[in-house]
Length: 282
Image (cartoon, rainbow, N blue to C red; front, side, top):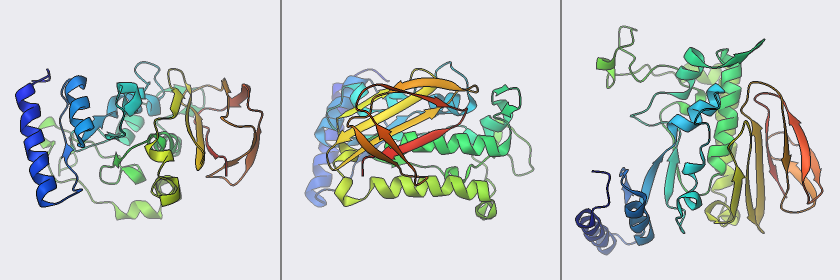
């Protein structure tokens, strides 16, 4: 069913046209997962499509190099001219990042992703990259506080595939945990920046470049109203990497309040495991 289907495209265009006639500028959001050629045609028509990046983001948060490249969550990587890809790390249908971090995370010496605070910090880093990617985003319940109950959690506390749709614990108490609240604050600050009207061009841009294939990852958005550079080390050992800021001069660490002097040419940085920064040029 994932192959290009012209009849399905025609059906969705008819639905979309009717939606716009009844409610102009309304959103048509599809949980679609068809061939890229089909999704490209629908996105060009104005529809928004889910972009499942759960596996790749979770491999990165757990610190495993296999499949830890989440570039398929970037619309230009799919050849889309419009930022109509709704990239997500978690959904109703995917395992929770924190659950797998704590159950299966990688380790090196005293650095262990299965440690709660270490895992939360790595999810901060993932959230910073995820939120920077142009286009709309989707968040699953309590993902912003590191929800660590399995998708297969049963009401009696066991884990069973038959409990996939069973009610899950509601954990407002997570907000009293300082490290969980820190993760929430990263989500809040990153998304607040993303929806600031003056920076809309930045977060809908096609001027996005990246290197996400190794543990030392970076994404750069290059728009004059706000330039953004996110860097982070998803490995479990210290990593040296080279980055080139789009412009020379002072860049500001959005989440920490410090700054760095960019040369405008390649410069090396050493990052500890889980260390990350969100730099802006203003």
